[in-house]
Length: 297
Image (cartoon, rainbow, N blue to C red; front, side, top):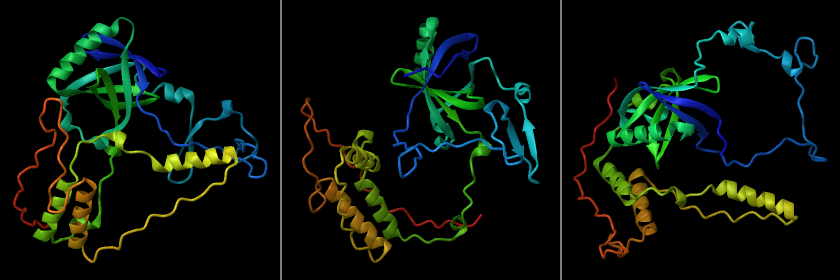
């Protein structure tokens, strides 16, 4: 990995030099626009809509469009006067419980590596933060944008997760939220059973990007000059007559996929090296909750 930024965590009077790395990457298959006939790359010219002339990159400025269509041109000098931090600091503002931060705020994730003599204070803050069970709320300026962020520990490494500002989160204003929708006890009970039948430990390695793999196969076939064939479509099941029937059928399908036999009994769990079963105990079945309809505000 290549460092994209250098700075320091500012924690009270303690300064911890760090390098910042992107923690994630998109694995999408990328394409270029080309001429269908000969495969030549398509290029675009920067042309001014007023005089029709091509504009050198050095003469291009940023423009803000007003509601009436007028353009306000901003220069590098205008941006230089803005109060964007250039101190390259990750300022710790406070510490909070991780559950208090709604994941909808998270934007981008970065790894932090101690730089130079920063290893000891880095490890010290890491150990203290892990013992507290909390995350740090910090402010940082990355890529010409100031952001709030959280600082937490993952596998011995500080993880910086930049956050959106509150006014960047859209309000979910949907008409159905004001409707008085009645839920029957049988439907709620069956939906709860479906959730219980699909419980398990999350292992991201069990999932794959089937579309990307298929697209890569098409590209490889083109390279090798092989004929590209389409897979046979899977046979779809007939739609259920009503919601309750659909839920009941889903529960049965989930049990079948998890290896449960008819009657609700599961296959014997694998034994651990200690001789104890590794199967999770199923929670005691609760009585169905009473249906609560959502009332209008």
